Length: 288
Image (cartoon, rainbow, N blue to C red):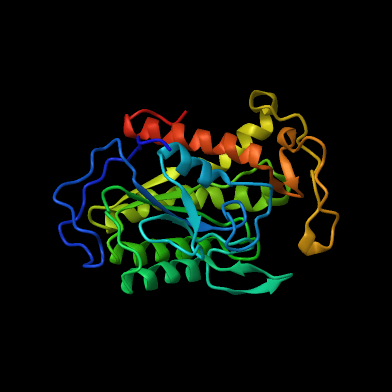
């Protein structure tokens, strides 16, 4: 495991939630020691349905930052970076449903509320100077107005801010993946405005825009650069849909593992780009 990390410059508020771990000074700007993720199947690492054949991009980002990311239903979450993302989630509320023994569609509002409950019960404590709250949602908001998606995400950020969180990243969506192209193209302009619109309202907060979705587009558009040879066919079917789950011969060369959902090879390529993006932000350089 690596010991190095990365951070985004942040001015912390003097008044923080008592549930937040106390520090005597801000962490150096090259450090991120903790991350909490909220999202859908493109970030789910096992709390819901792992819609792929291995870790998702945020897990690879965490690995590059020097720590492991665990699902929020893991047996031991104390002191860990936690992924609350669940396949099928919309940005708002939704209790979800069990399908073939796995949870689908548990909303990002519910995920944030679960985090809040763990903070209030003292199951989670964090240092706001070295903790990143990562939002990657909207792919399942096809039937929601754009302004509702924005209201959902900004409301969730405000909830976390009130708990002491100060560092946030809001992800843009992919636009070259056919299953999600329309919603990505519709939502990206409004998602891009969230940091500039919301940050001035939250003293001491840093809200950045992550090019998470465009990084998937980069792999799709330049597959050979990342060892990808097939950008059209799924490698395997989904067990929960009673499809043949037998994997193809070379999943590491497929963009998709399941229909519309990337292989872990694709996720790794995106995770590496997310890490590079954070490096550039820490150095005050434009995103790669």
